[in-house]
Image (cartoon, rainbow, N blue to C red; front, side, top):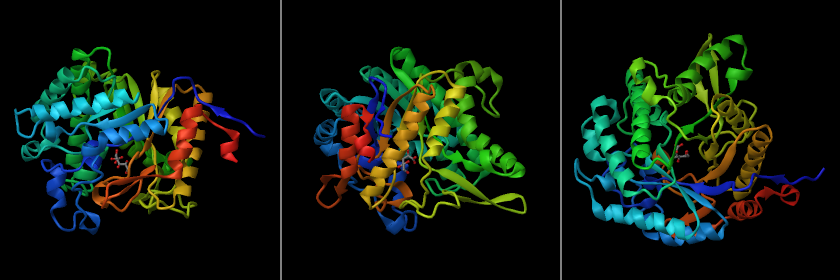
Length: 423
Ligand code: GCO
């Protein structure tokens, strides 16, 4: 049976990227320092000029528009705005004004992240998000941004509040390289506080802007499909990673945070952003989860990141959000690192069909952002993974539009996946 899969009117189609991963020439944050130490990054790569989006943003935006995107998720680099404590760099404010003007000129709605893993060196020296008293610096940053950029319609202040606690403070693979469960819990709690600070600050100055959460949302497979014991254990882990953030922004409930905070943490989202890549699978030994795989045992093929592909997880996660939250949902990241673009084409189609299915079943999904528009710096994995729909030659900074970008352009233009495309 041939069928077209139509998306709702006004659906947003775009790509996502972050400031540090694409801009290039950022020398004033914790990641820059971290990269200097041999062994921290695969192949000892350094972010350096990256995809030079800082210099080429105008050309890039024109290209995104040509590819029928109508929106774009991007970010502001905190260490550019505040190179030192209490010092705002007005030239950088000017720069970002130009970036947002250019997005507007190209009819791209901007979704803007304020903190996407990188913090200024001076903030890091003070203990970063591990110290609750440092949150006032984040608040100050949010205030400067709110006052200077009233033109922004969609904010996602903190990218994936669960990832920094996990990668930086539990696994120690991101700066500052700590490995402590206590630090994980403390930083996660402070991330959620920081989210509500950002929400309240941005809304105070721009009540009409939409402020959301962008949540990394792996699908904990055994929570639903394991045996009795596995379901129990996996649910606990899912609570500690996924549910915490959902409860914080919807109910104002955060473990170890007194209930006096509840009121100002509750209802601190105008939309829910789902970042989805894969299902995770725990290997159990003697009843304990001893290892974590980023793929199901049945999946043999993995991406450059070692992640398996499991599109159904995106549908399941959207439906889970729908149950907990009545507002709009966006897929704020979904993508694949591969050298074989035909796999990317398949990945995009399979995941969009799951998004479509969730919409059919009543989920209010209003947009989809592929990660990533451009090839870019993949943190501790360096430059090897190729996530982009648009390839980047890092020697020449030349952009190469991959076929997946063309397919995406067709879908965005028609606002549907046609039966022809599926065939
Ligand atoms: C994250 C980030 C991105 C990554 C992307 C691919 O989820 O870690 O938001 O910065 O680059 O997810 O790993």
